[in-house]
Length: 527
Image 1 (cartoon, rainbow, N blue to C red):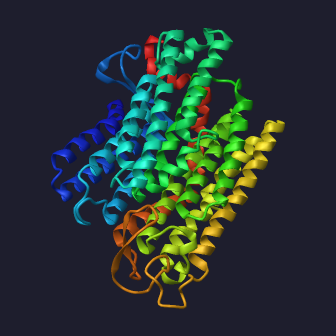
Image 2 (spheres, one colour):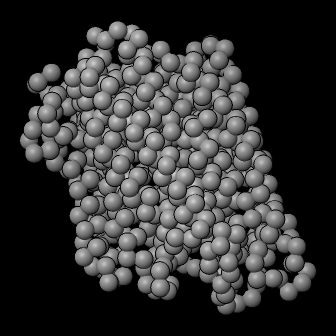
């Protein structure tokens, strides 16, 4: 059964090859993509059950020992994130069918989209399951290479410009990652995470601290931690809605996962606790202040994405089991809610031709379903009880109050303030886009930004210079609305199963702090 750990990495890559082979058949590409992701969801669920019941599931690729081969491990943390990320990826893929990511017409899919999307999924899976630092780097590079293609789909001026910034930042972080790997290998003679955890303690404290800082700097760029987050709000909003959604939901969380894994397994202790707490506080506060100042829904959501990374970093900085459990729970919550909100933003843009708050209004009356799809995850993001956002923040606040540390209390205050400002930001978006009448509501309801009740479909050119199909009929496109509704429902379901889910995150945090189960699963009798 341990061979199942290979499938989440191999299946998407094989599926990508098949999609390329059937590049002329839209139907074949869709069937292959959906079949692959549904299978990976089933495999991830099985791995989570086995990891929670029997302990970490490890496999050495090709039968090679961990010291010289490639090892993949699914413990509670990686299996849980793998399951949630694949469910979200599947919903985004189904959404893209309805939107029609196109090159020569709405019924002709861009032939490179499906294989690239599957490669992205395989890279995320590889990053979650890799048991050594170099293959974690490979997983990052696979998902980044595919993201470079996806973020520039359509090759509009705005997308190429934003994609260039994104690529430059990605290359810089990749170079830093390679430098970190080289330094660690020179210091301890291995890049296997389990072996590193045993050898790192033999190094002088100054060398160990320098290596830790190198890795944290690398992962902070990838996770968009302030002040290394300026690239994100300018990059994500220009991409097609499904691409923006999957980026917002997954890519930064891979950086957070890498932080959790290395901080608990390789660098246990609180040597950088103060630095991490300060970074978490600044990320929360500066990010949400940026969101409050925005007048475009997608940019507003991009800044809230940065801000709420601070919550996860806050749990990591505390270094306690409760802090790690809260951080893991919040990662799961944020993957689903942030992705759902970006899909809703895509629906708004599809319907009205814009996401600018100054050009929107009256959508609650003209499209109550769309209003509901925005309202529920927006309140969840703001942490309104009883949603999962409230439960995740409550766990982090409890963890921050436990140490009776002044800086931790400041972090608790920053988390509360950020939650209130998030509520203000999403309430502003709700009021201007959905509740208040549009500027031309008293007239004939113009074609863009008005929630027009006229039937039919037109095309407009949005602020980014891209052509947007504008569906102004009362009913939302079913192919886009149903996957969005499913993802919003999944985010609400996290509240319903919060008790068992928090039990898993608690056990995952305990396993992370203990470290021994992971090390034994990787090294086995060779340790």
